[in-house]
Length: 111
Length: 114
View 1 (cartoon, rainbow over the protein chains, first blue to last red):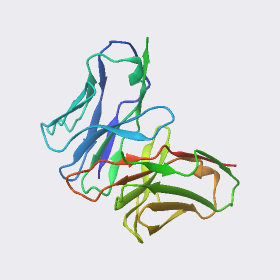
View 2: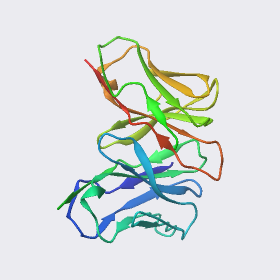
View 3: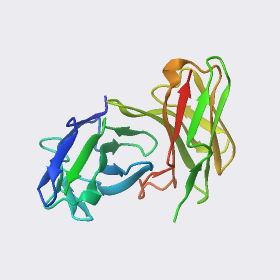
View 4: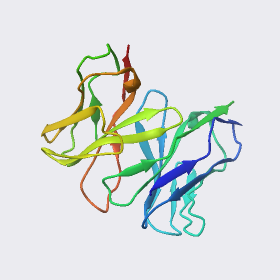
């Protein structure tokens, strides 16, 4: 089947620390991969995406590389800010009708 | 920018009540989705619709139905609410274009069934 597994949170970091949130997937074909972010009290927003192997998605200082060999799409940021505190969801789709989401990882950034 | 509006932010209902959750999008998107979000489980797809009057079951459709009479509106119906349907419900939409997979989400409805 198709599924996404991401690291459990919460993740607590100090401002300017390096962030990694792990995401691995299983898929019956060649998926597109996404990271969505949910700020408190809001719906999810697309953060970045990658549509094929070795693609790197990037936005707002966040990056993730589509690794087919390890079926991973880990999210990284070199220096987090307090404003990055949110819940981060990894997701995949094969046919654009069904999107499979991970369980979410809450990030707390302390000043 | 695309706007997906869910009619209520918080809703409290009693067991056995019929509950309607409304979602409206303003960008003429063909595809609309209903998810529920539960701690530790992430988002699970309840139903989706790929056009007016067209619908397909998602992964957890039991106890729910949907209605899509107009393109902009997608309603989720709990025929007889139960306490295990207490959850955050998220509506999403996207344009039916294989080069654009981006989902636009509403801010959610937190439903409590007592």
